Amino acid sequence: MTALELQNYLKAHYPKENESCEWKEFKNLKHSISGAKGEDLATYISAIANMSGGHIVIGVKDGTLDIVGIGNFHDYTPETLPRRLLGVCPSLSSEGLSVEAITTTDTQQTVWIIHTPKHLPRKPVYAHNKAWQRSGDSLIELRPEREASILVEPLGKADDWSAHICVGATLENLDPEAIRLAREEYITKHPKLSEEVAQWDDQTFLNKAKLTLDSKITNSTLLLLGKAESIHLLSPAVPRITWVLKDRDGIEQGYEHFGLPLLVSAQKVHAKIRNYKYRYMADSKLFPDEIDKYDPWIIYEALHNCIAHQDYEMNGRINVVEFPDKLVFSNVGSFIPENVENVIERDAPPELYRNPFLCQAMVEINMIDTIGSGIKRIYSKLRQRFFPMPNYQIEPARVQVTIFGQILDERYSKLLATNQELSLHDVIALDRVVKNLPSDDATLKDLRDKGLIEGRKPNYHVSSHVAKQTNQQDEYMKMRGIDDEYYQAMIIKYLGKFEKAKKVDFEKLLLDKLPDILDEKQKKNKVKNILQKLRTIGIVETVGYDWILSKTKKL
Image 1: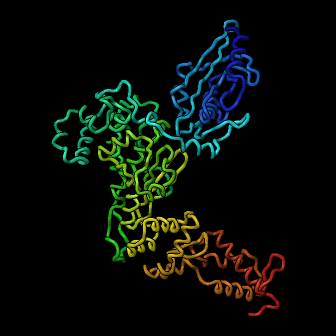
Image 2: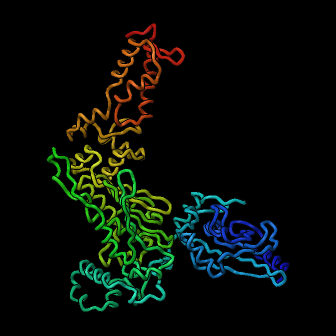
Image 3: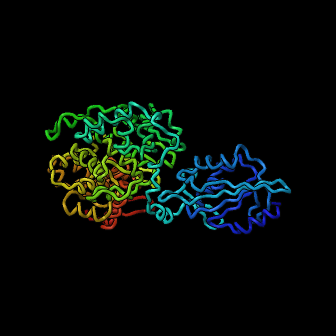
């Protein structure tokens, strides 16, 4: 068609720019596909996909649809552009993503129409590590209400990436050592079948263990058992675990990447972790002398959960970061149960999993369970060790869990050792208080009513009753601080000697004597409150910026 005919065609089919249609000039594609955040094609793809999908017309005047044509294609073609977009737009579906190229017969100008599919259920599409949407003529970060709407969409069986047949993959793409290990774990899970398993060939075993689907290699099969050189069959997914060693200051000391097969790689990562012996407080008879820093089962459970619940369509990797006193595990993808409390408090397994086929296969070879008890068991085991509870950091597209390898607060640990009647709910709530993490008012009130904590918000701490039970009276008094009368007396004595002083002088006098639970800002507020109280009762007064003893003071 001619340039005029093409313009009329575009006006008829893509007549208006809105949340499902965009016109862009983009005469030079070199930096237009993945370039400036908020301006490049990747950002517009994210914005359109996060609504209902739509179309982007490039090679036309923005606002008029006049044909200008694409002048420099760089190295992009209608066939290669979708692959590039899948690489820079995590969670973008390949189904329905295509480029329609039209070249005018009279002016030889080329226009591309990029047909963009709607996001997959519960999978916002990202560009430059952000999810986008259209707002009027502008692009903005995805609004919380739109993101929440996407994250609660129903999942269908057809959306299970882990169950997809891996086209072109055969048994030759699987690692013999991984298959042998999978057989061993399958027998551990099903000991009554040990003699039968010995008679099965590999194909029969893979079917029985639900690692293949109708004897076909799935994405799950390759993830767990695939040869390292077969990773290209899962592209653009990046099935990789990265172990990083850092010192106390967060400075990297070493790292190593582990690819397919993930069943074997998980064991290699476990072996990298420095699980030294941890010695409890020497003066306590409540604890054993020493134990491993980390329970091996907890390490495997956290790592296997990352493998099971990773969103592989986001093309991210699993990270295990080892510090001297903690392990940090992270994977990409939303946390489907929304929060950890939902997992711990419910007595039934979750209804939905991100990778149901993969999860079932991992159950069969003894990597995880799907009765909803794995995370709860992590908490219970840490409680039995008198260690801090794990810290979960849940973001829209990332989940991180921190496992501590040492005691953070001796009062808390002695409480767990001496009070076995505490519910897991109370233990978790106390753990948050000890770590100065936010808790809802109802939970804090419950802890206060039970006599487990005291203090004023936000400076709660283990109560005197608990401190007495655990022989921590001295530390408790240090935490609570000396009575205000003592600080008032110090101020009065100071003014009696020096006659006048500024607020900063009192801060120098008192800050190191105030309770350790207060940070510097809170300590300064405490000094201010003490001075104001003394002024209210007529002991001191101000002259300009100076504080002096009141001429009418009554001591």
